[in-house]
Image (cartoon, rainbow, N blue to C red; front, side, top):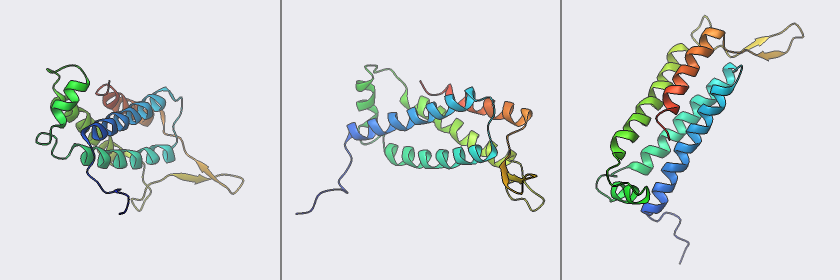
Length: 150
């Protein structure tokens, strides 16, 4: 008999995964909000992280209303009145809003491609930081997501 790596994930496993992923998101937001400068490549890296974490969350929460995950999570949080659907929906909405903001506001070249690096005087590519205006707006989006995660 082979090891059951594709077995159904337990409620405990799903809840732990949801909490871990949301913690990663909170940590990423906190680190970037505290940064004095953020490069364009770092913002793009975050875009990939958001997409990957959203896929994990969607997988972990699939059919949560019918498989007992909601009541299990409420019991684990010792709060039967906790509206997990509303809090999760708020977090997911802000995560998607941050993704959408990055896609819509990322600096682009004349061809519409992401403008990430510059060639400096030493004939090397160099990181380009977000401008003060971009940084401020980006941090506002990060804060909006961060406040939905306890």
